[in-house]
Each structure stands twice: as C-alpha cells, then as structure tokens.
Length: 285
Ligand code: AMP
Image 1 (cartoon, rainbow, N blue to C red):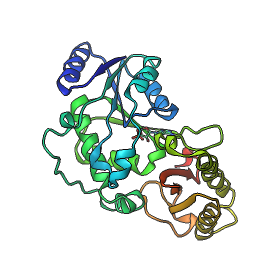
Image 2: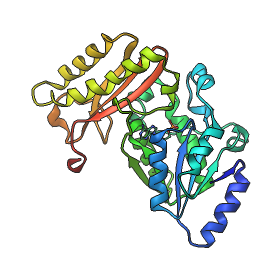
Image 3: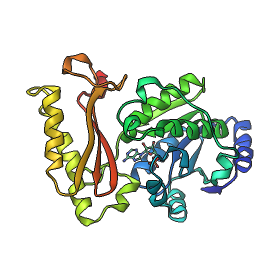
Image 4: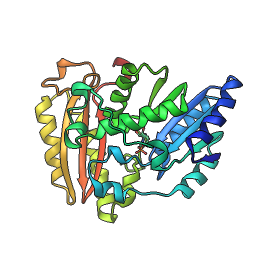
C-alpha cells in the first residue's frame, strides 16, 4: 500500500507500471471503508496487476451541505485496512487536485438520471459523472469496480463510459451486507443504537417482498414494502420503486421486464440509506 496525494505523483507511478505492461484496476470510494469497499478492492487486486483505490469525498455530488459536512472521514484507518489487501496505491487528493478549476460540465443521461436518486438528489449524478470521469482520466484503468448497492449509479457509469468513449471495463459487484442484512455503508456509522437495529428491517422487508412477486401486483408489493417500513420507529421511506434494471424506468406489471429490481431510499433518523433487491436471478437478466 502506497499513499499518494497528488495527480502528478500518481500519474508518474502508473506510467512506470504501464511501461511494464501491468494491468490497472481502479476502485473509486469516498473513504470510511468497510467490507463492501474491501470486497471491491479484493476483486480488483485479484483481476489486475496493480490496483488504485481513490478516497475522495466529492463535493459536487452532494446536494445536501449537511450530508457533505457530516460524511465520515478517516484516512488513517482506511490506509490501515488497505495495507492488508495487497498491491494498492491509495489516491487521496485534496479538492484542488481534482478540481483546479470549478467543473461546469453538464452530462445528459436522459431518464436514467431523472428517476429515484436523480429525482430526490438533484444534480447528484452530474457530480458523480464529473468526479468519476476526472478520476478515469487520471488513472486510465483497464477495469473499474463499482458496487451494486448504488445500482442506479452503476448503470449511469456504464452509460457515461459509452458517451465519453472510455476504454474501461466496468465491473459491478454484489452488495455486501452486515450479519443482520443491512447493506454496509459508510453512513451506517452515523446511526444511533435504535436506528441501527431498526435499519435491519430494510433488507428483511425487501427480501420478504421477493416471495410476494408471484401472488401480488407490482403496485401491491410497492405499497406493502413502504407501509411496513414506515411502521418501524425512526424509519421513513423516501421512495421505493420497482424498475427495469436496464432502463431504470418504473414497471406496472411483472411481465414488462425480465429484470425487475426494487430500489429504495430510507431515512433512519436523519441518515439516508439506500438498498435494492432483484426480483430475478442474475443469470436470467
Ligand atoms: P462510496 O464510498 O459510498 O462512494 O462507495 C464506493 C463504492 O463502493 C461504490 O461503487 C459503492 O457502490 C461501493 N459500495 C459501497 N457499499 C457497498 C456494499 N455494501 N456492497 C458493495 N459495494 C458497496
């Protein structure tokens, strides 16, 4: 593990690796690393000669200033974790390194970005595309690893790669969960004891909803999930939608797509958590 803070420093190291024909894997993160991140890093380390893990809390993707201020930052602990994970460069730049000038680029992802996270966090995916494209230009990886916890993000990143003609393979990795099913997230650190305990119901109820697919309409499953979760103290559903995993558009009945996925955002107190559940087996996608 080698910590690098400047674009120039990282580019120099990677240039040398490229000269030796080494393949480069890349895992972009905002730090406060947990096992979800580590699984991405492990996969990158396995599939590439060298891996870069970026740790950068990107201001342009936060539509809520408070969320940005409260986002956990713990670079020393993150580096310690990554020391155990193999051959990695940890790239932890300041904001000025990534944005020497304000980034005014506007991306157009059509209705992939106007629903769900895009609807409730206006500008979020534009900020994600700004930072990920900038990082792709710096790292020039062969493969980049993203988690399916942020399912909509992974679809939009693939679209961005297409639009900007990056020659990068996007690898989507399964959600890693706590023992009680809660999707691992850096934001879980901000949950109090009651919120943390109750947040486990998000996955429980999503998972149970899979059994209802054969007997209930899409609309009925949506209502059930939302109502059950809203009954639990401290939890408030912001949205729950069942969409086509490719187009991300809402479906009205199960037959509309071979790949229905339920995507949810829930507030536990003031902590916003997201998760999703596939109503299909990945092999049939
Ligand atoms: P973040 O630091 O939250 O921006 O996440 C960095 C990457 O890790 C993103 O591609 C996330 O989708 C992924 N990730 C975060 N949590 C998980 C998880 N529980 N399981 C799998 N991937 C995750």
